[in-house]
Image (cartoon, rainbow, N blue to C red; front, top):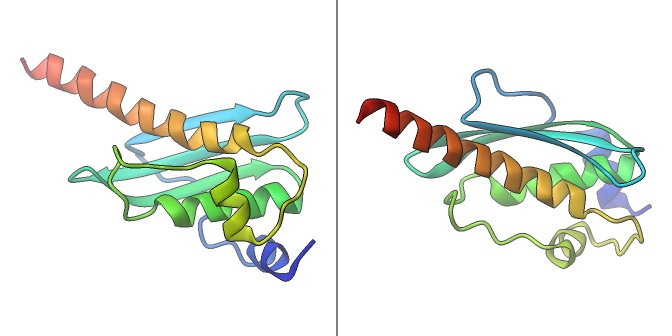
Length: 124
């Protein structure tokens, strides 16, 4: 495990949960060993805050921290995340599958859009 991964694990800035999130989602990896939740706050189509909670090893927690830093202050409809970009940002090519983490943040964004659509239908 490299220094970047250890620093992100030991000093997470995005750990927690947003109260009254614009979007929220949770995901579990295929064998059920890791559980991840992302919550986001969206204002003017920009992710202004993001938090995660995870029951996982230090590497997955560092992955969640990296994903959070990559999406914060980005336009909600312009997220371009893939396993390679996240692992490159970490400087670590660990063999652990992290796609369930990437899918989780995308699910939180989808939840935001579903809530937005539901809200606009109620107003109409």
